[in-house]
Image 1 (cartoon, one colour):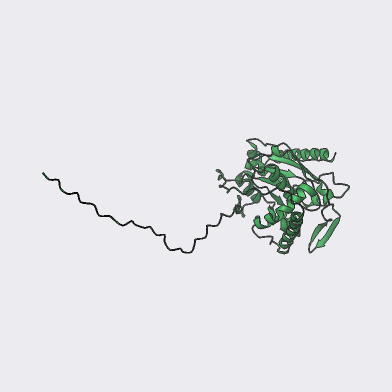
Image 2 (cartoon, one colour):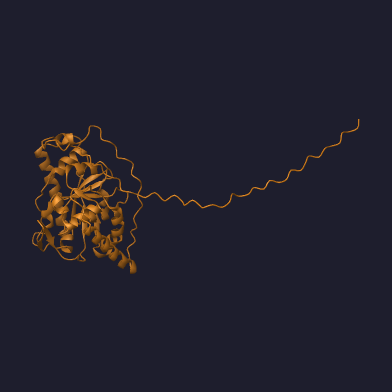
Length: 337
């Protein structure tokens, strides 16, 4: 049988893949911008509640766990030198001047101006590392789960909060950012309005509970404004504590109390008197002097698991307050020596 002829398959033309016509390139998505988590202003105690409501009622029965906080970029701790140091000083002073010119209303929600904090950070590093040569001891004792740092005022300006914030940022960068509270009379001064933008809040029970719920170190200055007006002869003596409510707040919030001693600010910003500013008296001082600061963190004072039940016991509060005061006094004497 003759074989059938083999039919050749038709040759198909090669398909050329042409790229789509060039168009406008889509701009890359902007990098997510870190924003400081806003603290809820919802007070644990209703405003209409009487002052006799026990501290134990200030917290909910089941505290809400802290919300996830985005990881913040680590700030640079390279000390500015030469032209960078000049730019850091000029930029920091200009940022502070603008912040002071734009006074924060006393009833405005408090927070932290990240732009101003970034502008002032190089100047803060320069002051911390070179000009004041801040020596820090005991930073490893600060608990990671949040605590109350109870410190003394040092100097005529309320700079203890920023200095402690830089100290823990330098030596304990894994901790949440430090916040601090000041009395209303201090926050009404020009320096207080600048402090609001850097992380200060008014010393109220509601603010302390809200900040402690974020598991961050919170600084309290129980001496109040009197601690800023310490004469040269009495710079080694603590003023009487104007407030002791921090003991009950720590007991209810179940956080330890860490005594902190600060030395050096009373010579860097000596108190020279007061000047009238409207209806207020503002401490008078000099430009910052190049005096070494020393900061010492003491061992945490844990109030115990049953401390919340004793938060309304005045004897318990006074005993713990005296223990904190004695610890700060002992550390101050050691640092002065």
